[in-house]
Image (cartoon, rainbow, N blue to C red):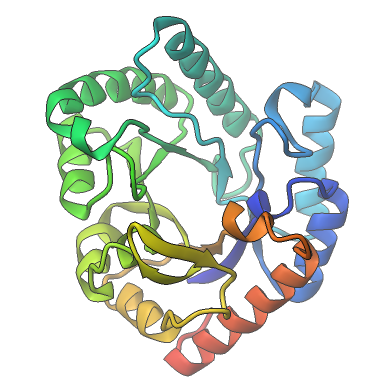
Length: 279
């Protein structure tokens, strides 16, 4: 396993500054975020800038295991759904364009909807994901779907069912354990269920249980990262452990994206050592 970082926690930083800082800390992989409001927003990247960003990753010897392009597909409004699916297809095109030696990065996204909608709309989710995954597969890109607290896809059981129902090697999971920790699901339980289906991961720190919880910067809370890493190792996961700093943290008046990355690196570096795992 290796240690990565998502620029989700660095929306206003230029990609040059972000990559240089993360590489200097010791991160070996970075997940760029391409949503509106980020400096690398999808529709602002012309061909020259896309090539330049790919070149920066090479110059800093950084992997790009995934791209953060979270857009829900359980949208009820037809116009909004068409816009979301179009954006996801353009995001998949970008992933294919940004392919490196290990192939294209996975595209991280979400299902959307609400927990109470799951039973009524899960077949709809299968159909829409099937359409998206067919497009992704033609470009050799994996869609990494993230189960998310408060969304229609919010438990390990639902996530496994959905992956199996779509039945494509181009649909896997972006396994963000924080969303199960705040539901009170034991670390070993969620890891055993979801690590075998994971193309990528996110980690945060967290405190409390839904609905009264908060996401924290890794190292600020009680999450036992070494325990989690040992469980992931036992499950056979060999990809990136990628930290994501939540919007909850970014809303703090004194939030410093570089300091957040510093704390995250120290926390994960120490956890790998405590777990006795190489990286």
